[in-house]
Image (tube, one colour):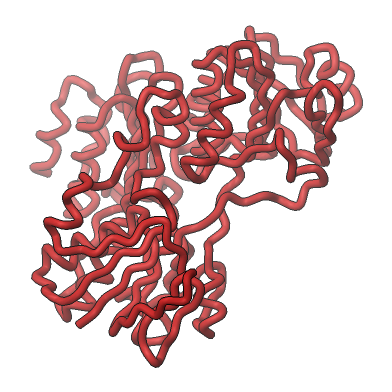
Length: 423
């Protein structure tokens, strides 16, 4: 059997790794448009800060592909799926035959339809090339506006202030990540920005305009602001805020970073007539509407749920796709997990906090490390921890194994969280 995987992100590399680990001995090709497959989470952190180079964030060692019998085609684009005849067409016109194709095409950085959002001073952060361009402007004293306070935007803002930039972070949502973290922890995490000197605005963006002094942003609708230094004037009157903002130099910036999500890259699938709706639609085995084509990672969406963009979810997609191709049972996925690093704090989240009907705080938000557990009907359904990976690992086992939790013991930091796994 010949398998071609299109896309060298974590989903694509996980697919080829799972195939070989599962005993697949057929022809296996991984096609990637970049220099080589690399990890993306460091792009907003260590790579953007310059503390790691591209080779240090490679998903696998250079020799790993040869060792695994994977033909790696880099700097190679795919222009068409040639199904049902089999195979894909490369950018140079070469037809690469395949019995099964796995689309791991990921997504591109979203650019909302804001007037002026496309320009040399308006950056996105999805690829190493994006990070290289952005890093060049993150110099001490640079005025940077980050739009979007989710994972990418918040991490980019943290890195920028670490590099000595003057940073403003704008998001129309009052408390980013509240659904995943719970409102109290989300408020604490968002509050780190102001404590590190970042001015946060609750605001949308109406437009950008290039000026001789940089790029000027116009904010939309009602605005609330938390200024660096602990001063927190608030207003719902955009005009009034505008006067304050001008005084605080919150209108003109040397550069803007858009961290407002991603758009799944589905062009190949659409051109091939596959079912697409907010991602390439797949079944529980990652199979698309064409049985010869599977899809994994950020560009795929199951017919029964929303598209998931987290790193580990892409890894599990690859394992399921490999199981389908191998004809073996798909591994049971554990509770969903993701992490973020900002302002020197490591935050991990597992499960679904919005499913909880009871919140338990273990420790204090003033402690060096603490955690928040979400319970429902006496069972842990989620946890979020700051600098406490042990708590999250324990919570994951409690979720996956449906181990009953005692709220009093769970909230007591003197009780070893591992003991709670005994029920």
